[in-house]
View (cartoon, rainbow, N blue to C red):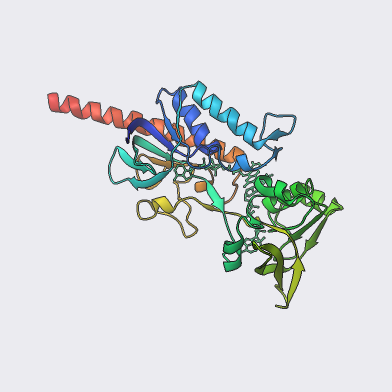
Length: 326
Ligand code: FAD
Ligand code: NAP
């Protein structure tokens, strides 16, 4: 049986952006519904140490932080729905959304906090070997590569953190980066370069992963030198693709303006999108900072902007009713 859920504020996504929006909206008496999606808690649930979320002198764990945010949101009155939205209709208010199982969600306002998803290299061999040696999450799958030779692909914070994390499981970790310098923060770079079990291969990209054995698993990779184009094969047993994330906005294509990279544009200094009553926050609208704390900050902005929008809409509706009565 399918159900219909209505709310003054519907929030899609339960990462730091969505849950912060929920905390503010609930405290404003708007009884928000948070549709959690297939990754309740968002991207931080697939990492371990979080050292840069303010308020904690000790290193905290990503999944723990997200549990706390969810509890705080529920404590002040937000409702969580474990569902994934598959269809949207933003042509009129209340906005209508349909979940995978057919449940209907109606929102007088909508806060989009659907975050981002891991990018892949898009090689045929990668597709074939996903889950058989190729992964996009060291903190999720690293344990399976205990004592094995692994590589991490990428040059940002995620790649460096994943390489460092993999040293908990392996003594032979190689970071492969397509250029000759990393974009990761200096403090992470210093830890990486100082680690005795990590080496870096500069100016290399994966030409193809190589399968072997029965059942087939990853056994090697052909690396292309990005300067000379030459290919060399290296043996390995695990590969973690850590080349960034794309905004989770496919759902909104054709319903809401997206920029060239698929992000949702907002009016500068606000969380307002091009559709009145629809707001966006977190990684889905932020291609620059993409941090838990900025996601939380813009989540707060989205809830406050939505609250103001509702107050103005209510005022206009009342004024219109008075005019009609007169
Ligand atoms: P996300 O956390 O991506 O959450 C998106 C939410 O939307 C999820 O709950 C998902 O289920 C939901 N969703 C998606 N599609 C739908 C749909 N169709 N219907 C319903 N729900 C949907 N930042 C830091 O500040 N410090 C760190 O140490 C740090 N470490 C990181 C480590 C890793 C490995 C990664 C990948 C990121 C890290 N980040 C870190 C970045 C940080 O995690 C993100 O900036 C932050 O999570 C973004 O929050 P968000 O709420 O915008 O989106
Ligand atoms: P990112 O910063 O966008 O870095 C992606 C890396 O992958 C870049 O080095 C890029 O190379 C490389 N790359 C992209 N496409 C590639 C391809 N097709 N083939 C080979 N390499 C490719 O992504 P991220 O590291 O996932 O970080 C995303 C955001 O989350 C950032 O804002 C980051 O600060 C944040 N984050 C923060 C923390 C933390 O604070 N501790 C931890 C993790 C993530 P180029 O450098 O050549 O472009």
